[in-house]
Image 1 (tube, rainbow, N blue to C red):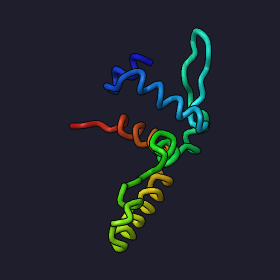
Image 2: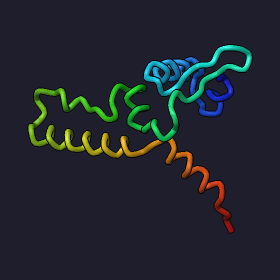
Image 3: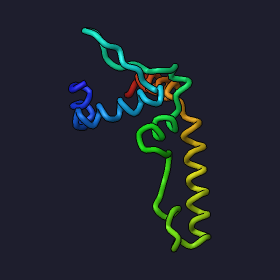
Length: 111
């Protein structure tokens, strides 16, 4: 886990907190023992970017303006539309798609 944290340049204890949240949502699962670690809790095609964002941040997109009583109604509606659009897009991105995109990238030859 320390290797992954170092590769991603994040503190190891922060990575542990993320993994705990992902495990609580069934996105990841832990395996005990000498060769233990974390694995995906579901197939990559069943995990969306929205699932991960909600597990880690509580929502896909949020802004204080949505809860601000002084925010103009027109602006609040615009924020709501943006929130809805981001949720829709994030729901449409699966980890399987990300894996396939990475696979295609590795097959490219640059001249």
